[in-house]
Image (tube, rainbow, N blue to C red; front, side, top):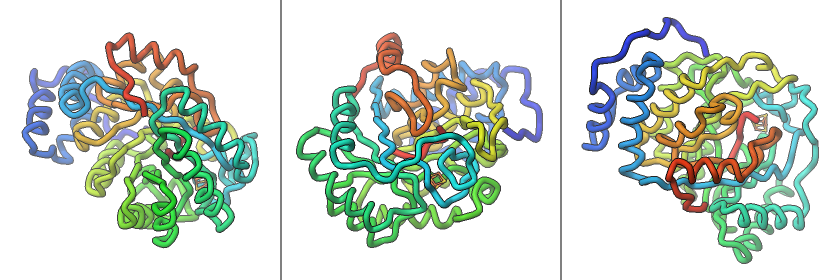
Amino acid sequence: MSVATAAPTSFSPAGTFDAMASQVLEGRPISREQALSIVEASDLDLPAILAAGYRIRHHYFANSVQLYFLMNAKSGLCPEDCHYCSQSKVSEAPVPKYNILKRDDLMAAAGVAAERGAKTYCLVISARGPNEREMVAVETIVPEIKQKYDLDICACLGLLTADQAQRLKACGVDRVNHNLNSSEMHYAKICTTHTYADRVQTLRNVRDAGMEMCSGGIIGMGESRADIVSMAFDLAELEVESIPVNILNAIDGTPLEGTDSLSPQDALKALAMFRFVAPDKELRIAGGRELHLRSLQPMGLYVANSLFVGDYLTTQGQAPQADYDMITDLGFEITGSCEEVSG
Ligand code: SF4
């Protein structure tokens, strides 16, 4: 992460973050300055930040953890140039390349999602936006999946027109994932083939069609801490229901290769800041969790209330049993339960 000033090395005054949590729980949103003070806090403040964030998390979600299962239904072959993405046209990463999977493969993956206790099946394709063949494939498979399994469907298909969003709603898609990924200011540094405004418009089309919005971002892409705060406030203002926070896994062969340097402490402070800014929204620790949080992964669940179980789009996650054990060891509960992730 680019950081203008070194983080302070002393504790903040006792009660600082707890008072912020009280403010949020009393219905008074925190300011951008307060949000910045969370991500800029000393590592020494991390326990106090997590404890305060946990008060908010517990108020809205108790100790529940929602699980999501990702299915990369079309891999590689994307004409866009998102610098973090191993499936982009500028990536030289050796990822699988295939067109949208056949019905049987998509149904089999839905079965795995159900077996693993996921509430939501995230059907993802790599694309600027879906072509007609892909739209028809999704319109065909979604009713079948929903008839057979008790799964919600989240579709992550790239940019959507208003008409495409209406069609997805009509076939039974519950939610669409479309990440803002970074701040408006930083966006041109991570993608030149579409704009931040394009992404915001897709989210508006999703909302107008009556579906839930899942949208988050990737931290650790060279943005400033103020950029992360800016993205969090934009997501809160858009009232997205679910916020996945990826921590960049800078895959070899992508333009961002070798740039991931976020510490576990910085990642946790950023996660906590999202909880303060969007207190009642689902907050998911997404791609990069195992790589960057390492042994501190469980601490993330004191502010986040959701995880992916299993692998990411082109990188491996930890074994599902390790996630179940982590949740159980915390004394938390899986309540069962898409997107673009950096992996
Ligand atoms: S993030 Fe999505 S749109 Fe961007 S290159 Fe990857 S698959 Fe394509």
